[in-house]
Length: 151
Image 1 (tube, helix red, strand yellow):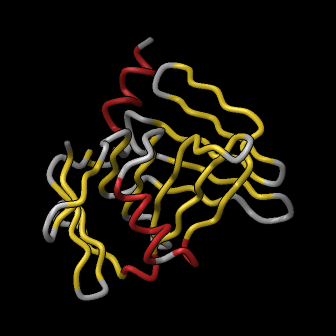
Image 2 (image 1 turned 180 degrees about the vertical axis):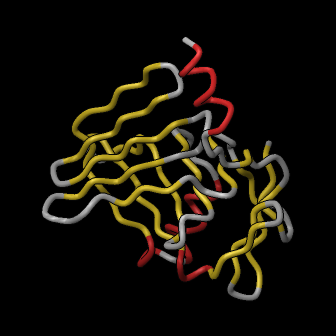
């Protein structure tokens, strides 16, 4: 018991986003963390050709957004940056407390809603794991001018 409490106090946690997203001048900015827009990757999970969830992240592991909501943020990327969105057929998902597991034929996503930590495992590739500087989940972003804001 003391070990798990101690671990929780000292384990790295991302900062949950609470303001807005700005996409401007080829940069994606959430709170005070800014990354090049071209470094963003989104896995859009579908079940029988219907939206299920998406997972947005950058290549440096600074930002992560997980959502089961088909909001304006995923719509923006599908419309304006479709080359950065990978459509994946979801085969399994599980939600246990703050832990999310999403599986597809060739890859798996493990996401911790409390810390923002995620791991992506792809067949025949090494795992990728990050605890981002800032993260969010199920925010239901709405397109504003010039910002995406939480509803």
